[in-house]
Length: 143
Image (tube, rainbow, N blue to C red):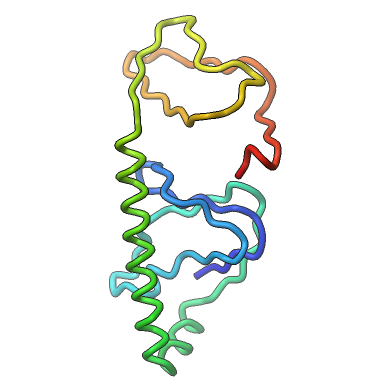
């Protein structure tokens, strides 16, 4: 289990769908400690450099054994958070729009304000060249 002290972490499904962005004060990874299968249900990916506090399984188990109420409360919150992730994923899937582009079509120009996320599905074996400088974002754009 991880407590996020600083930075941002993206929570994604196995297929790469973004379901949450976590910030300082949030925690993640508790699902594998609370569920009997001990499996991870999502992927946590650093969106910025982060500082985390790590709670090892043996420490977590020792703490929750001493307070069954605490463990039950954590399970309740984890299930509620999982429901929120599911709702966010459904909302994302409903707002996805597929676009077919031809060779030479411009998706966006360097310097444009970012208003969407793009995922490329290439069924023809072509390539998508990226022209311009490396990705630079201001603090406002990262939030």
